[in-house]
View 1 (cartoon, helix red, strand yellow):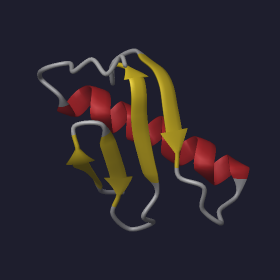
View 2 (cartoon, rainbow, N blue to C red; view 1 turned 45 degrees about the vertical axis):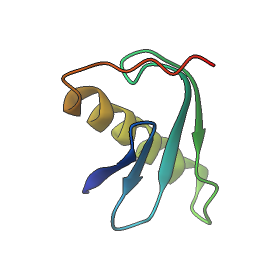
View 3 (cartoon, rainbow, N blue to C red; view 1 turned 90 degrees about the horizontal axis):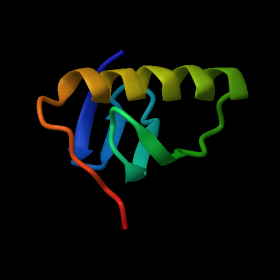
View 4 (cartoon, rainbow, N blue to C red; view 1 turned 180 degrees about the vertical axis):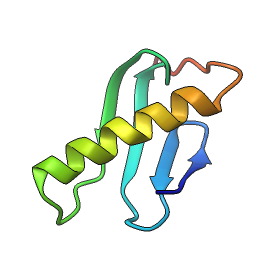
Length: 68
């Protein structure tokens, strides 16, 4: 799987198009995220969410905070 940052608060898995938006907190300690609602199973959504958050945590050298 290949993940990319669309913006500093949105990541997307390239192959599936699954997107995760960070609404508050940090990528290291997210408080509120919104996963993409795609036509995939709940199991696959949970897997992609976990892998996406892992990618975001490991990719950032600076931890941005998105509290609104």
